[in-house]
Image (tube, rainbow, N blue to C red; front, side, top):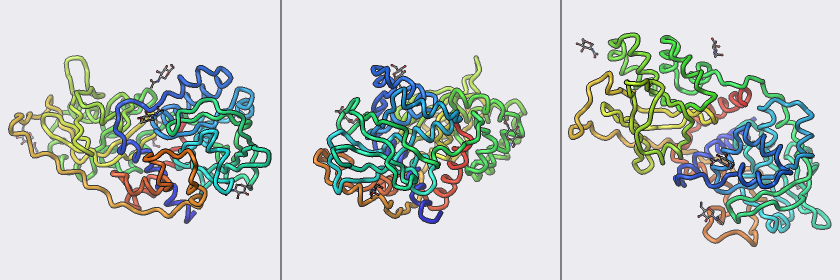
Amino acid sequence: MRRPLPLSAAALALPLFFLLLFSSTADAHNITKILAKHPEFSTFNHYLSITHLAGEINRRLTITVLALDNSAMSDIISKHFTVGTIKNVLSLHVLVDYYGAKKLHQLSKGTTLSSTLFQASGSATGTSGYVNITNLKGGKVGFGSEDNGGDLNSFYVKSVMELPYNISILQISKVITSADAEAPTAAPLSLNLTEILPKQGCKAFCDLLIATGAAETYQSNIDGGLTVFCPTDAALNAFLPKYKNLTAAHKVSLLLYHGMPIYLSLQMLKSNNGVVNTLATDGGAKYDFDIKTDGEDVTVKTKVVTATVTATLIDSEPLIVYELDKVLQPRELFKAVPEEEDEAPAPKAAKKKKTKAPSPTASDGEEEEDADSPIGSDESDGEPEDQKSDKDGAFGSNGQRSIVAMILSLWLSVLLV
Ligand SMILES: *[C@@H]1O[C@H](CO)[C@@H](O)[C@H](O)[C@H]1NC(C)=O
Ligand SMILES: *[C@@H]1O[C@H](CO)[C@@H](O)[C@H](O)[C@H]1NC(C)=O
Ligand SMILES: *[C@@H]1O[C@H](CO)[C@@H](O)[C@H](O)[C@H]1NC(C)=O
Ligand SMILES: *[C@@H]1O[C@H](CO)[C@@H](O)[C@H](O)[C@H]1NC(C)=O
Ligand SMILES: *[C@@H]1O[C@H](CO)[C@@H](O)[C@H](O)[C@H]1NC(C)=O
């Protein structure tokens, strides 16, 4: 397990890297809509949606989907996998790089390894989340997972749709076999928030959720989408004297004020810029706050305090948990600070120390000078994306957090749909 650690950790930072680099408002594509025009992929399309992979595909700017037609999908269906396992299997079919039909047939040295969403999910053991693509005799192109003993068990069929360097959908003949992706994942469809939060640096807040019963409200909102703003333990402990002064009902309101009943990715959060409702919002009681983007920082303003998002602790649609440097104080419970005397802006979120991940074994395969590489595209430097993410990820990862994130992610993937 030594080598894979930094690789997986870096891969985890990848979505963040994209979110931070491109804070455009709209999704880059809509895979559901594209595939809807091709009924032979309806089963594949259906499972991309229920596993939430569609959302991940849509958010990525450079992606290749290896699509399976309905008859190829029957191999998966007949194995009666849990949704969590189907998610792992299908995420191995989403390459986090652009391969048009042309590039596919002109691989330098005739072979390459591509990282996938399975690798990025942190669920893959070692490099089993890489797909080997190899040009074979007679213009055939074979695909196999890295953990499949060199067996390329699936073949290129045709190009379904290409939007150069953004999204490519290629049909392949069969499910790419991978023992790791097909490993059973525990069945529970829903996450247990109070088990997850403490493991991910959100202990003090979680303890209060449990003590007051607010945890149940949070838990019941996960399936429909939930965004949690978790104050750091230090921020919460400093706030405790004020907290203890609140009535029991107001304690619950304050805690519910830190959740929103929708899933808001960092990208969506950044483009939100306005008033949002919370779990505490209830008829007359507004309990809302403002989300503001200030350069790289996202702040939450309540008219009493301004808190800054300092990290993303969990991002596993439909649940996302952000870390805040302060407890949010609603104006319903605390005295608002008049606009002009507004407290000094929250200090810039300290950029976490960045670590450099070693190159994946795949790097030689990714250096290819493909004829169709776009000038100035984010792929054109031929640098493996795992490394880029570590250099550029502003919420990047100090070693410890990465490992914690990876362990959590592994653990989450066991529970996740
Ligand atoms: C994508 O397209 C589908 C089908 O047209 C639609 O139901 C869905 O809302 C779209 N998703 C987004 C994020 O726009
Ligand atoms: C891909 O698999 C083939 C066949 O097992 C092997 O010859 C080739 O070296 C592999 N490619 C890479 C980049 O590992
Ligand atoms: C690819 O995505 C970029 C960034 O979203 C966009 O500017 C460009 O127009 C897209 N290319 C195509 C061919 O749609
Ligand atoms: C979550 O886990 C805790 C501790 O294991 C347990 O007490 C609680 O009942 C669980 N909640 C749900 C909703 O499963
Ligand atoms: C608690 O409430 C009392 C009475 O309203 C007030 O005097 C005191 O300052 C409050 N303590 C804190 C820490 O807010």
